Length: 167
Image (cartoon, rainbow, N blue to C red):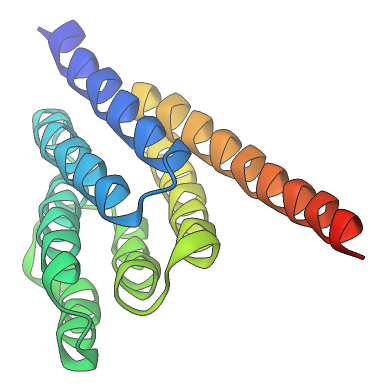
């Protein structure tokens, strides 16, 4: 049955990577919401309940950010990320940090800066997943992190090339 749980994470990371590579911010967010659903189940089945709840909150947070960029909405999700671990019986507290960095990304940033904070959030998930033995999620987030870095490098390279042409 454990293989099935890992399959959920593999599906999730397909959606996340697709979202990172797309230039449309709203579509990126929608694909990450789908990934959050798969990852919430994956972490739940592994007994990492804070990670599971953070995935649910991430999906809700991203959905909310599609409809509003209001400061108080973002602040609400940061407070949730800080408070949630104290009410859940679990050990995976590192994932709670992702609630803060992810909220900053989807509420207050856009474009390449949004993707930069998503990559930072991904790196925190890499640490969390390795530390708690969620190895498929570890490799998935490592791939997301790597693809995100490549996307930013490509963006900066093409920006520099375009500036050279204009000058």
